[in-house]
Length: 242
Ligand code: BG6
Ligand code: MG
Image (cartoon, rainbow, N blue to C red; front, side, top):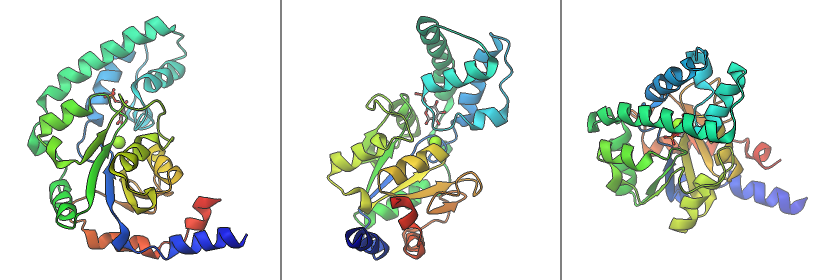
């Protein structure tokens, strides 16, 4: 009991000066690709008579390609075997990849480049933790590949968020303790993954959907390193450890 109390106390007393790594989810944090995923899934779902709406599409945020298809098939009440699923995910991806060809450097969300530049000036490492197997292509289109010290994408992981693997891999590669790491995520499952990995979690987007994050912000515009000190005031780490 005493040991548990001590470890909780250590986390409470953690200072923001300790932050050594910021991990960014890609889709929805760095760039708005959700609209392209939506179009591509909607088109595909039409083929089996299902009309995917925006509300259901929200539930696909952070979910891997194959898991997204499984959810859509479930909502549509349609059964497909593994071979058929592979054909469908390939077709969806072909369409999606065509759509993201239009991405350009201007599409990076406001504030992202300034914030990363501030992190670099303060010797804080930056990495990507994304479920997307198209991460490399998107970073290249946005011309920001070189900004990151490490990139973990859907090709490198076996477990989907809310499993913390996609974030822990960056910590391992850069030899940084998860407790000195902050994750920026727009998906509820991504926040769960950060918490499961013992990292701070900053939600980007809607407070109601991301209420389990340490703090929630609308985006990185006008967000600065000093704002991370708000994490020091959080007192709910004990809940995370339970
Ligand atoms: C996540 C997106 O980042 O990547 C999901 O939020 C998407 O919507 C998942 O399904 C996998 O992406 P991709 O590019 O590998 O199909
Ligand atoms: Mg996302």
